[in-house]
Length: 321
Image (cartoon, rainbow, N blue to C red; front, side):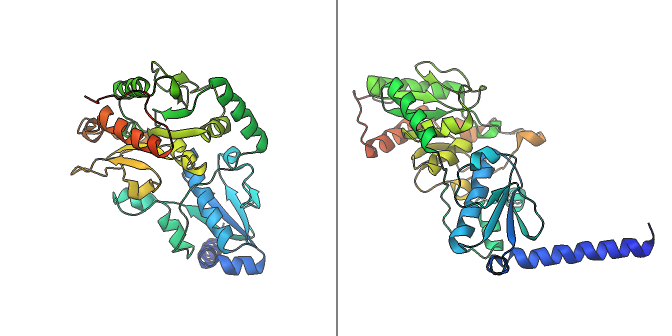
């Protein structure tokens, strides 16, 4: 390839990049031109997919005629979403923007919401940060049948995160489950959701690893409350209007990824937020002190408060010791 061809190719790539930057900051213009607007789920975890869908929903609400294409490795999660024109369609013929927050991670920012960089790039300063999950009527029917078989109101638990620095300790989860069972007796069913790597808990109906991901969300929609770590199911619970108690520790902050409807338990330490990632070999040098400072009794009191608001009363009074 000649040097002149290389120069032309480089200039063309720069022009394309600048044109996309211009268009992606002007979704109203893309809509007026009848072009496709592609939002890319850049990180690709299930939780990021739901947040990418939140970006798409806000675009559609602001620009109802905009043709929105969402590119994601988790298309199943976006089935039935009325805000999308297509899923995993071509990225050409319009504007492309990534749902991306690497800058927040790199500067260990504890105040900026993960949605904010992308929303601001789109010119959306005032946006709805809630998640939404769209279940089919058939999914709702099957979940209702499962709930009927269980026979009691549900409290769902999700113990395990893909990042160990976001995971509370199994012995604490067991103590929490014991407190809940002692207090609510046969009036509340504790149901464990998530993947098959969830630790075993006594006194809990284990559906972790037994349901497809959309089946888990459909069952979660029937819960009186959800208790978990910062994970996909935290976003999914918000997406089906179930309040949660979320054990943050100190890896990130509720300001980064939390929902106002939830009880978010965060521990501020000199090292918080650390934004450590197991996937890149990070290891906490402080023996997970932020998680160790959160007791089962503290979480139990938050759960009781949420359940009381949802009309679930204790069968017996338990003194958390």
